[in-house]
Length: 82
Picture (cartoon, helix red, strand yellow):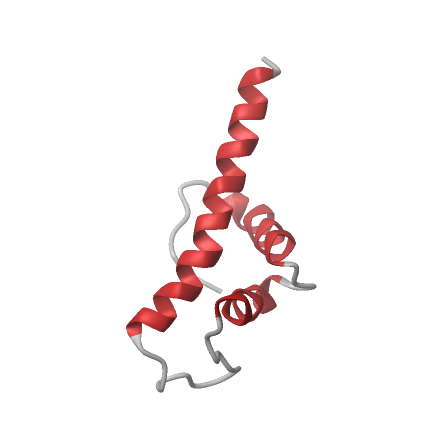
């Protein structure tokens, strides 16, 4: 799990739940492995020094991109119902 500082720290649990939901994982910590599987990157638990920056970027981009899309969708729905 990323230790980046969130603008709204209390949102961490909700973001982790979203990460698991959009990746189809049972637990947020498994989300990156599901994303890696989808893009064909051999990510394993533990050390992954054999992976290239491009492969790591594919995993992060897949997961992060889908999270951003979901957040935009949620914002649009909120605007439409205001």
